[in-house]
Image 1 (cartoon, each protein chain N blue to C red):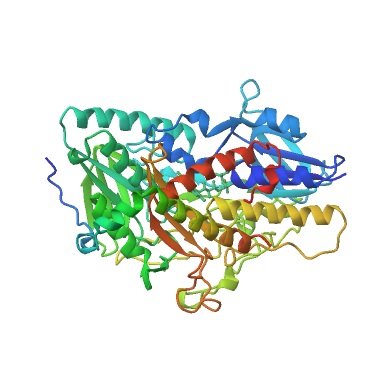
Image 2: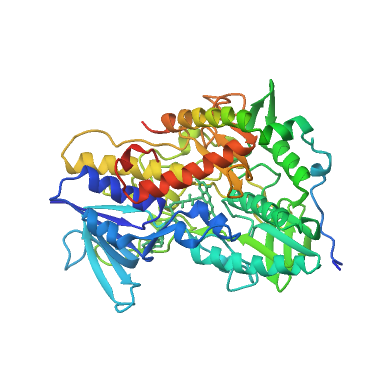
Length: 484
Length: 52
Ligand SMILES: Cc1cc2nc3c(=O)[nH]c(=O)nc-3n(C[C@H](O)[C@H](O)[C@H](O)COP(=O)(O)OP(=O)(O)OC[C@H]3O[C@@H](n4cnc5c(N)ncnc54)[C@H](O)[C@@H]3O)c2cc1C
């Protein structure tokens, strides 16, 4: 009998748990540790955050599903990993701290044969003073954050209706943020709801981003083929913003947020400030912050993780300067170099470097988007890791399964509005996520799989995906046919 | 009154605006249905290439 322990029940962790349970015989254990009682389809938090979707539509309780599927669930935070065990544990184990009402704070240990770390990001609001829900800006990164954002937005829209003129700022709250696509989507949604409410003319909408130029999206920008020409995501985004009357501040690192004012440094090294009445700024991400100890109790966290706290896997972390970066730097198996029974999937794995060109201001401030590890890659990676683990448990002497972000694609659909004909969307697909200039010398990506278009079609697609992924996550009949 | 003036990206002011025809196409149900199939095909290509 083997125990597969999965830390985190987000997009990667839940995918891993469901596939592990499906593929492993009943004699093997699948155990999940996650601090929240609910699963959350994070991409749809955007709609919750503009008050267009109820939070219940994007979350569901995990415990009944896991009970039905015979997955052992612990509502807890993983606090430390002990890959070599200790005097009392022969196998590796993880110390967890309960987050459940009644047992909150209680620590216990879970032994494992295989560990899959899917703990995603720690939302590092502390990196910028005044950032986030405990400061002066809102967030849509979690379902409760999105609910709060919607409440504040509603108040702001009431003020617009009463005739006030207000400034809305949406974007990234630090120079090293990722997920610019989410900020872009929230901007698009704000524009839509304010038009719907008939108050768009009273609102100034600003997109404030760490991207050096619009359309970078943390992936170094995209090149599309459109009507016989190659165009860029830069021009595409600029055109959309001009049409929707959105202004932009690019290459910005927020230094401090005080009530109603964002201070930021730009790539030219100049510190500027913009005042706001409503601001949704994403935080930078850190790793979940679990400590790692060897058998003797020595702290080996710094060997296991990169400085941002993400777990190192089979990537090339010595790639050097931007000019030397190659597609081969990116991990394929997500196995940690120190322990062949520990893997990290989704946002939890340490990328070798950014995808966008790194930039530093004359003052030495790094302003470069971190590489996005969006939903589709997170799910694909998690499934690939499970296939490797299942092979090993079943004694198959096969090489580890591979899922490189230089081979897989991603889709980012910014969709606003709920009705069939009344919505709109700006949709992008990219293939691969990490450009491979050897395989695709022109732009690093396959022009047939890389696109940007605006229209109702993407809006329908986004709604189909929303229902499809929630269906899949709830393990409804034939859920496993639906790709990650 | 906003007294503090940030610098906005000037490229937006000269970016191409969609024509009336493009705007109509974005809302035209028949045209968008065809595009929906197109995006689906593109997504299938992206998904198939990512799952080995
Ligand atoms: C607002 C927003 C919109 C987005 N929109 C899109 C989109 O349209 N398309 C797309 O592809 N991607 C989108 N993304 C990105 C997508 O949500 C992430 O890529 C995806 O959630 C990453 O999956 P993950 O499992 O690595 O992390 P998560 O989904 O964040 O899951 C991490 C899990 O680990 C748990 N955890 C944290 N710490 C611990 C610990 N110490 N112990 C145990 N468990 C822990 C968390 O509670 C959570 O359950 C969006 C992101 C945001 C924030």
